[in-house]
Image (cartoon, rainbow, N blue to C red):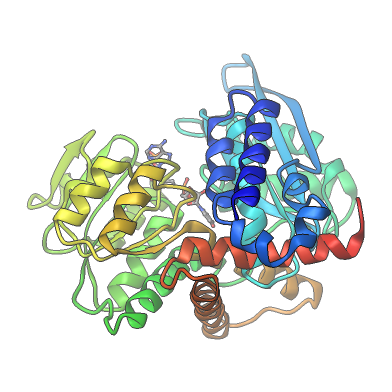
Length: 448
Ligand code: NDP
């Protein structure tokens, strides 16, 4: 396949040249295209119709000014983004991230990954992502509300339940979704529940959406271990972050008999060897919006490591649940040396390419975000289904659906990896499953 490999290298070089300075986007593209040679070999029609080249170019990119006034009356200006990457399988779908590090390259990496993740779920949703370089940390509710209203005042014209359906991500939770939807409803004069997901169940949201990404990443870890004749019961685990994904990953790990000994935020790490007190973490992070260091004020036997490296804490299962490139090669080596046997990515692209290589060489079961954290968006699609039929499912039924979806995703990725000669490699499995589904739809639509 040397000529196919050369072709792929050329496509990647072109992506770098056309999108200068967007290193996270380059990384996300490389991670996918590097696994596609066997698919092009089997399906020359994908190359003939330039499917990879087309997938790497977003269908649309919107960048806009978000002016707002802070509590002192000072005018603030942020930059808003929405990238509709691919709508071959359904309306654009993907979260909004509010974080000071946001720029076009971050939104494009997330949007690109979202195409394949959404396809892997088997649900009718395209890939997109958006956000702003706004930092909600330390802002009052009124400031967050004014920011969200200004953001939606521009974004609303690009949305719609059949066009583009955002959700939350870092810095965007139920509070922000409420303000965003409120402004959408006010401007459009439509109570269009299906235009945004991650809503509170009090007004059109789905039960289990809040828990879905964390629970799903744990269900994926459970399946990977099961495939090796093992289970989560009694395992020592660490989870990075202490936001939406991390909290519900910890909850499900504990429910399945694992002991979670550490979590973090961007300031530091909490290590509690006898097991984390989850109700306290929820109170600190979800209710009081405080820092994780305050955990150690309540539990004197817990250790707070300011700027510490969570991955230095010994565990058998690691669940990165904070942000991109948080787990590098050196940390991966440390995890392996300490006996880690499975990694399930709750966050998007948390492991660097060097880190992934270490896990592959050590035979660690590695669940890439595109598969392992797809439970969140899958449950968003279930929220859209419930909104469309004006129905509301029970928690038990919704969780059962989520679990079935994760079992299915695991099975198809596992089988596809084996079909393409890389048994046990979930990265190859997820990329190929997602790519084939999108590629077949694109072929059917002709050159658009
Ligand atoms: P939250 O904002 O709820 O929590 C993010 C957590 O990660 C916080 O503890 C935060 O700490 C920490 N964090 C964020 N940025 C950094 C950073 N640069 N360095 C260190 N720590 C950081 O976000 P979510 O839990 O929703 O998202 C976490 C990850 O999961 C992201 O990669 C997101 O893209 C991914 N994801 C989320 C889904 C969802 O449904 N929410 C779905 C699929 C993937 P601090 O408070 O100090 O900033």
